[in-house]
Length: 320
Image 1 (cartoon, helix red, strand yellow):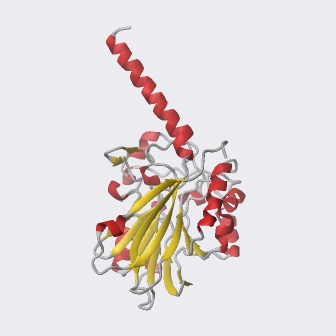
Image 2: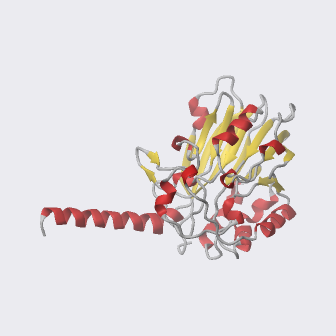
Image 3: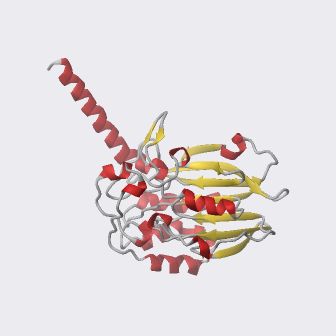
């Protein structure tokens, strides 16, 4: 074999090993991300918020169900679910098993496109195109109404085009949410206007963190917006970051905590799942986030805004 042939063979072996790692190992490398965000009123006690998103659950994903259920051991004060829970018509029981006793905590939710429609095979190259240049391809309708009924019966609040006021540790949290901007289902005019002045935290929730939506929340004076959808890029290049966000959000904000405008903070979850037709992650393990909300500093530093750590927690499917 000549030198060129050996190079091709080596490149092929590296590619195959990377694909195997991404599909068989990293996409099941459940990880807890932790971050602190200074958004509360002066003197308020810290509030621990568990952010879960993009489960993309199928009935046979047992280790994902177990891992998410064990997040209840963190004893969060509040839970936010930013959608895309389902990836199969029979996945509602599995999603509810995963959320388990978290449903006994105060919580809010909104839905994403993959709560309404099932996944379909797509050309992977479409994922790298700008969002505006891709045509939506919907799969079969999913039983999102059953999931909504079960979550609201347990006490979580549907924030879709609604306002809610919730008391958590003596802090009034004012929540407003949107239907999925990725499908252009958002109607911000239904929740527009400045939140109550006496709210200790003004929280916006949306599935896709489209800049046009974030600008509206910022203009109305929200302290924090939480979103999902991006999968953190799903495929990240070390030293470069996410290849895409699958929306109009810039790549630097594909996951984690950041600021938006002069005052508002943003947290984007990299999520816990993938489409069954694209079951790979690279340099971007599936994650949930425990946010510790702190009083807003007069001059917050970048370290206090973006201080994050990640801890692998649990093992892969078929192991635990």
